[in-house]
Length: 292
Length: 237
Image (tube, rainbow over all chains, first blue to last red; front, side, top):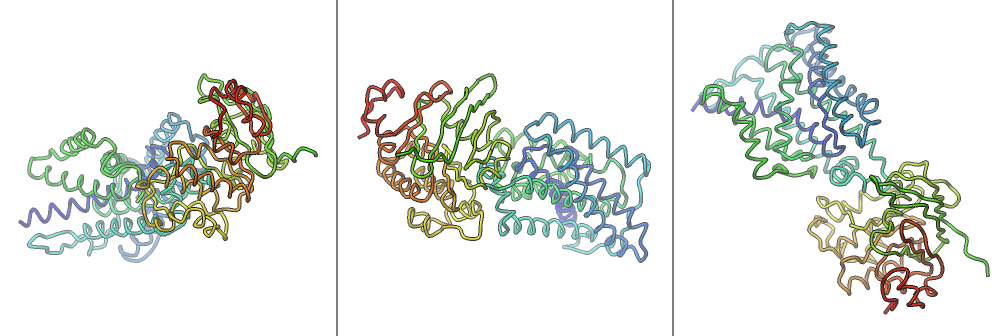
């Protein structure tokens, strides 16, 4: 029983990270039709910015992590907005060029980080209370799992509230359905594009922070490895759907954990099989192209 | 009596979509006030003309509104000059409620909900219903209401009666008449009875060019001309 509880909560923690990366990807594709292969690089950049800031501020690990996280998330949001304004905006309606640019950018940002800070993993500032465990139904759960789940739940609630109750959220929900019609109502949808990119970048950077806490280190390949599963989550959840993305992220995280434990490391294969089944039965995903 | 002043001038408008040269130099004028109907057989470029005027498709040529050139502006800026658009396929946001569909269309601090609810009281009753679950006629009401919500001096309305039951056609025609009291309407319409009821001017497009422009009553009163230009019988009743 305790093993199952540990697997479940760890799976939820992993799902939380997938959700944080995938939510931005999903909204960006749903609204703009842009497959952003550089999204993983935003995660890596956010994680490195967090680590860098933590080495430049005083105080204990908690203070360092908090200051670093604020800085890292700001860097993720600013970098994403910059990418949208400078590289993506001139290429709307040119999907092939967009893919080439985002793939190139992902490679370039990764190489830049390696050039500045090297290939070696860097230790992340993790307060002792995050490494400590809490007993749940007999299972000793590392506290960082709860933080990951809580952070994702807060982002989910925040994004849902933003989409449902704000003017920009309304524009984004409408734009995910029919971008041209939103423009034909006199709305400059490009502002929403930049905002969605920035929000996605912030969420990816937050995932970078949490992955640093989860693994205890940050390395240049972190974003790329998590991005693959984030794409799978987006496809399963349905492009443009935050609710679908959340459900898919939890499903993928749990499936991966359970399968890895009970079948000696076949978790990744199980996730790919789940993707294949969803594509066969419901090609448009669990909750197709409606941002809610 | 002098001809009414042109509010909109379309001059030598060309649109290429893929290998097709859809509009091959469309030119016409829309006088201020009333309804001008854009007529023609299926596939001659009527919808493309409206979309080109709004910059929704790449185009070449000139479109002016009250003397201001619009083709250099992005679509949202063209619309903000005061153009309401009712697309052919309604294009309501299916996942949004009726109320949200109207709210997203608001462009200023004084949206005309009273007018919209006066014309389409059903929309008030269905405010919290998702637009995707509405009937075709109700979706058309949402599409027209979105265009009427703001104080637009111009409305571009694309086949508003397409696929509607006769009773709804009458309701939509009445809404168009009311809209024409408030704005200049450029109407794409296949139903000649509706055209006869609401339009004062007609522009006929064929083969990507304008082949006739003049008074609606004059054309519709000449069944042979209607048949040759539109390929349909000219009775408007």
